Image (cartoon, rainbow, N blue to C red; front, side):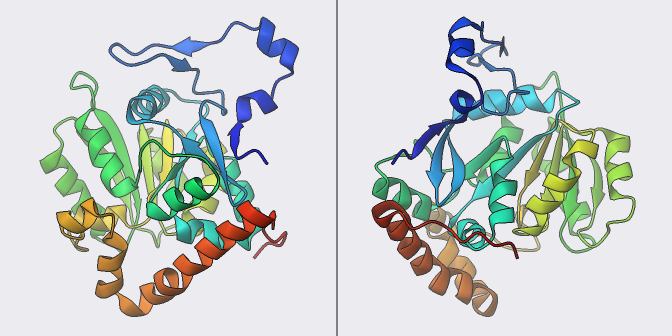
Length: 291
């Protein structure tokens, strides 16, 4: 069974690969990467039927900023943790949505456990709560990053915008919409043509919204970010740094919201490990039904 997939090899004939000259873009100081319009830019690891991106920070940063400055083919960026893949296990439509993204980043220790079972490795762990501040800090001061926030409860996106402006000198939040407003949202977003659109609606709603509306969006990169807008706003606290370093932030969230998080973590994490064993060791495949 092959768990490491190079999707580029699946989309071209062998003869074409041998004869074609690769297209690449160059950003000063960053490694050259394939044109971001080519969806199969990254190596992938098959995680319970979802192609999860296997990459490093430098490669991801290069792809992100090259994609953010372009228009015409918005690039989708998602994150996969145990909860995401549990949802996808029982929903073939959601798996297809995840499979159409340009990048699905591994988030959390559960993905590392899966990779070890499958004889694979993820060089780095990514989660949006840490990744986007890191990207914001590395933005070229000559070219501010234009960001639009869509999601969370009313008022939180505006609060998040203020905190982002205070913290990141090279980032401009060009617009906000709360997660309960849908009519006219795409027109409002397109009027600002942001480099990055952050959509925080939770799994799988945010990924489905992005997949359905991506062709209509005038953006560079659109990302599903869960509670990131809440964290940026300061209304929802993050775990202490020591717990983040130990990769136990999920435990902090469980203590903070036991009713909402009990099923996700206390039942979901063991279910993910069991499904991983079935998938890797016994070839059991996810269900072929949509929710």
